[in-house]
Image 1 (cartoon, rainbow, N blue to C red):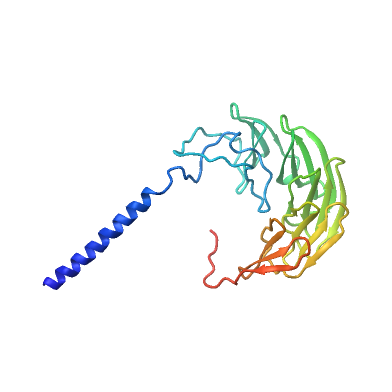
Image 2: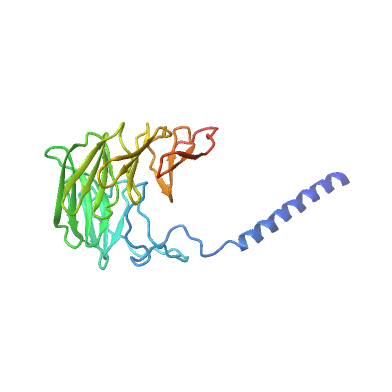
Length: 289
């Protein structure tokens, strides 16, 4: 009996010790750490999308708790699943069933919607205009449109002869250039002249193009490519990519390419040579919901 009581007492002491340790750890958790926060435009400036197609803030501001819901925005149609909201120049931009729509932040009223193309994507804001891509319903070709932020009027349109039978992706606008992967081609577009500069055939459907200073980088699931931004000349190709067509990431001069086996390869973005490779993941694969 005495031994049993001693065992129970020992267990209670261990549980009490764990409780004390957990309490101390919780006391040291920063109260400023938050995962979401209502922000104003100055906190989260408009930003172009990263290689994953999402939007990110340049110069993020630490936002302190508590979280507060300021207001709801009532849209005229359903917001498309996976579409990233954009803040720019006092407006909120959303992709909806009705098209690409702008809301004035001052009173949250809808000011305009653009629906001249199908399968719309947004490349980003450049100055007082925003660049949108889509499929022309008349001839099913990829078309880019430059819209005035304030009223949605068309500033310029770039028709292409590219029939986008499947999904297409485009880079952010940079130095009046945009690059779009459509089926098995990569297109260079000059926004200052509203024209296609060159078209490069690929060995498969391309990923979202990633831009470096001199090159546009793309991956097809069979190989990775670096192509000169100005003339479309191939700088290098690499068969070190057996990728799953996941978005590329560029970190300095290292191009990160995901593989179908779960590993990641780091390629030198200047030469295409393999710099390193992570171990192959083992175990049960977790499927996203």
